[in-house]
Image 1 (cartoon, rainbow, N blue to C red):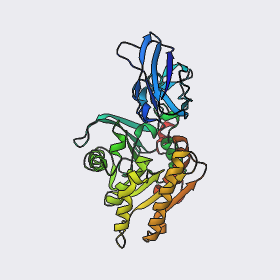
Image 2 (cartoon, rainbow, N blue to C red):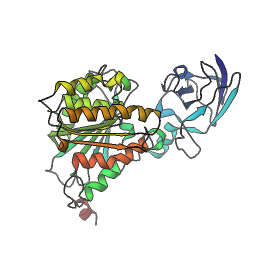
Image 3 (cartoon, rainbow, N blue to C red):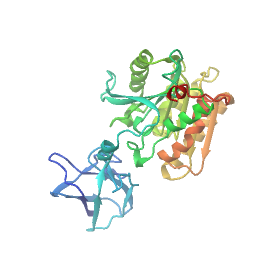
Length: 372
């Protein structure tokens, strides 16, 4: 057993009741639980914890105040990359922390392109935790009072639009890319409904655990509310997500093709411990395949992404084997891509075009004439 002291020095003293945590990859650090290892305040600006580690293997970690909304930022307010700790028995690692993500977000406010509305703390009778939901509107929505729009439902809402709330300051750029592509005539206009994740994310996005409960929230609670409030086309919905969200998007589309006409599954977690149900469903559907547009993508760089690549290719092979129509399936593999928001943002134009693409006829913003 290796024992090592970690010291965090904060630029600003934290108030009474505040706590600093380490979150990292090893079991001893909670496997990326943002409140994995609590630290002890020994001075106003000094926090300490003695780690007991089983191996001397280096690992990545972050510093938080108990959630991903409160992880550390640098002096410019940017999210740093993962820190690395190389264990040294009886060694000490001192880390300065300039600030916190929630403080930067409070100063800057949302950084979302276009018109949107935030629905705070949406409750579900099927799930334990409430969550914020962001509804994004395409250009021209207000100027076309009779037009109805297809809806894209997305998971991990904090990652979709806003770099200020997204991990490492990188979001999927769905707002600015969709707006530009709609105005350029590449895409038909559509509404995006991005439901945020909670601390139960892994279970809620897992078909074997609470995935069906989460889908009941989307289909039986959130979708009816969205359809009743805004000018949607209730018969045209799609779904998209990454990692566990990519797995759940596939599961949702395949199980509910009466609800979802398309699913974008980025770096889907078709690993054995999570993806068994999806493979079983596809095998069972031979001769009775759903009417569904499927976009699968994965990268090959980094340990996690390279692990998920095998499952993605396995699913693609199975879909071809059961005779899934090529016109309804797009598989895109990018060897350079890692398992992060920056890579998924680079994939955004491809799956948006697959789900909502149309002949390139410019769609001018009807609101522009009113502003002149």
